[in-house]
Length: 143
Image (cartoon, rainbow, N blue to C red; front, side, top):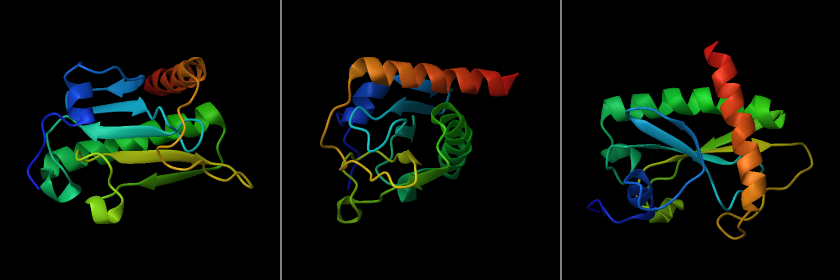
């Protein structure tokens, strides 16, 4: 499938749509999912245009996994989650809903079921509070 430069993540990357950013560097962007499955649910995506992981350059893939690891550790500390679900879908048949490669970081808690994917928008003030805790953890980890 050819890359759609007007997909929602491409528009976020160009600054045409807002996001609640927790991390950004030259190759990646990480922001909170506005319809989280759990508090702290974050998306990490490359700035490189690629539909799936298989379309992404080795350098882009490496950058994404390094940032996913760094942000996941900060999320875990920020929300106190004892576990993390990290997922990445490739193609509509696999459940990919936005045609731009991205990683989901979803905090997990014992006995707490995940909310359905992409169904319920979270309170923006709550998302801002969670983002502040995550970015605080990222800053603290930098020393």
